[in-house]
Length: 615
Image 1 (cartoon, rainbow, N blue to C red):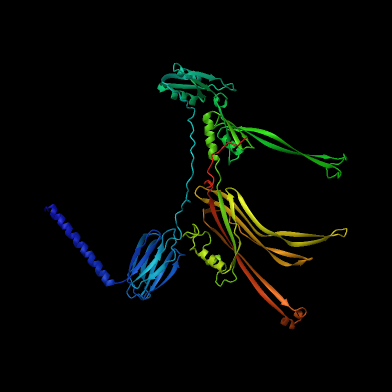
Image 2: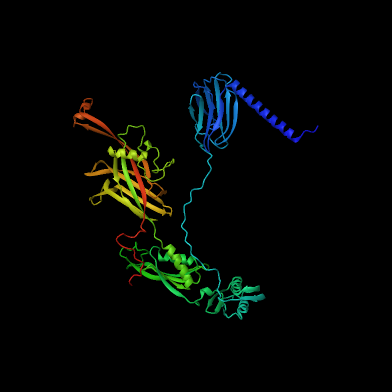
């Protein structure tokens, strides 16, 4: 039987609508019949929330870890309605599967199990009961985070243009046609230049063995410049244009044939010897003069049988020092500066360059990039001694009360950023200063250049030991051992990059003398020392590094008594007393580096251009 197409389409639509209505009715009937809790999953990237609806206001929950944190099981008690078994496969990190089942042995009890994805650990969930629903929140993953490379800052790049290899401009050149097979390079060049208005000179190679390159070419309407360029490259010869004459030869750049210029460059920051080494690495030939100091020792005596000076006490030694000047020449065989010669002057810190004008200009551009000023940083260090005797908190240190004590500012787990007055650390510290619980030992500001170190010492020499000896002749000699007590600080600045980060080391040391008695009429002290080394740390301009946790805890017992009466047995307790004093302090160091902007001229003096000093 043939049924029209539009009739079939109507039948399909009717069946689809009827089926959808039947499924919806069945679902509604099941929900109405069951009436139990339902399970849903919500959340975003790195976090997830489970929602159990219809649990009732009397439900109590208990959480316990399963498989060492790989999954969590939540027991629900006091359910008013029966639980239907529900299983969900979750594509939301860090969860992967969720099960909600009823306890077959206890009525009104259900088990909610949450399993973690492979390679991840679920953090401790947070339960929120709103009366009609239970929300189980997982803040994020504890493990399994993808590794990320450290951030890359901006890089300062300077461009120094270089001429092309062996390319000789030939103004007014024309197209040439030439074919040669296994011919000498000088013959090919002579044939190319014949009739073009250019002259040709070839310098023979007198080295052993001589270089006689041969080439094979086939040029058809090629420009003269490119043809000469290709022949020079393929043969390994060098050349330059002098007027209308093309000069070609082997090792030509090392010969003193071209027109040269001489330029004396006075360096401000970089050492002349270091600049000479840099130019030599790029192919220049540099000459450096340096002083060599030689010390010679001669012995004089009258005992010819004495093998050593120690064997003849009447011999004497005379030392003589000789200073001579040594000249060393060095340079690279390859590089853009081959053919350039230079010399240095140690007294004036100058570099003299001699060579073609183009090479001298390139070398000067290199020296200009090298002769940059090093940055400077003002490092402010505040060293404080915090009294912990008045603390009534459970913590054992001042820094433990505020938790994070690495860097001040920011909002991450390790604080980053400038100092903020609202930080808990500074709030605690200012409160301690107001209550006289903090003693500021020192607050120096050190100006340090990149790659240099600075130190400060405020110490006193104290006697830590007294030794008395008697010589065989009966003379009594007394020697004392001394040590330095006080405050010492050393700051090493290794690097200041172009993005405002300072890499430095801070090494403070505080030593306090404690009297221990009198020996031979001299007071003797013990040195109590507290030292801390930060290691190499990197701080941004204006950040504050907080070093804490160096705690000193000392107990002292003092006994006072009346002479003689205090030593009596039994009754002596009435005439003597004792007291115990406990002293607990913590050393806190705040380090704040600030970059010095020394590129601005003085307001009272306009900048003046660099001038050559009066010779």
